[in-house]
Image 1: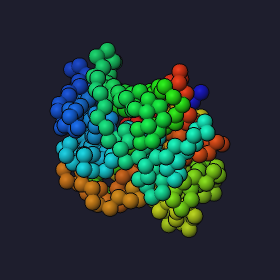
Image 2: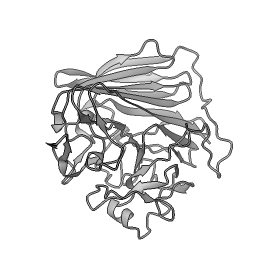
Image 3: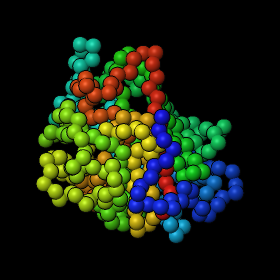
Image 4: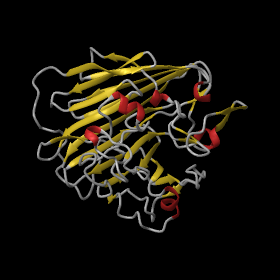
Length: 374
């Protein structure tokens, strides 16, 4: 059982809720046509909670497109990556805000064996398969249902993934429900069932800059991450199988450090990853598994999950070629990701927690992004 507090020794007086501009009207969900893809309508769905803060989603890839929350002065801004139009979304980075599946993160050599059968997957990351392949769940139109009986604005996306889609076995019915609470929490509930043994690992791939995308590097954000171990990788970013303690390494965020504080250290994993692009083994003892604080704006992001791992990625390969909301350039290390899930390449590592889903079972998991100010 996780404890109910997550305390940073250097922080006091955290404001749990935004006071901001209140909204006395009923929680709102607005759905509008965003585009059309392969004969299916794509929607932009705007959720507004009672504090007047806004979450925008699209059923193309079941993506987060916009998160608008105030800073410590009450000034509101979007703090995640996304695009203004569907055409830009379609042509843009596949990961921004996406629900990633059927298998989030990397699978070595695009292969895994299950019940003596070797499955071949399309390779889209050097020799490996990344985030379910080039036409994974980030690139499909999900069915959309605005939930009427929820306490907060909520939308459920569902998708039927046919047997052998991107090389994965089994017909899988997937759903992700986004709830935007009055505590400024994005609650993401995932569920999958299958008719054949398969592997499943879902995540959300939102990029964050708590000062606002395009407004500087995220290397000065302060990170605390409750993971005493991480999974080192080889030269193509596949876990070696080692579970390495973070103590005494630049990967120790069990006490707060700025993200960029130790990037210049001559440490093998920083060199291989060109920075942080690694899975942390979560302690799962506290309520909050990770916390990021931007001292300039006062914004705080907390990540709460029941999953065993959390991938920290700090935009090492952003190069300014992607332009998002308002034409903002997404440059090197101007965004970070904290992707909850199982470890990379788990189907090829029997010692890692299993990602196998059997017929008759339900894959069910929850991750929360919670926003506040200090």
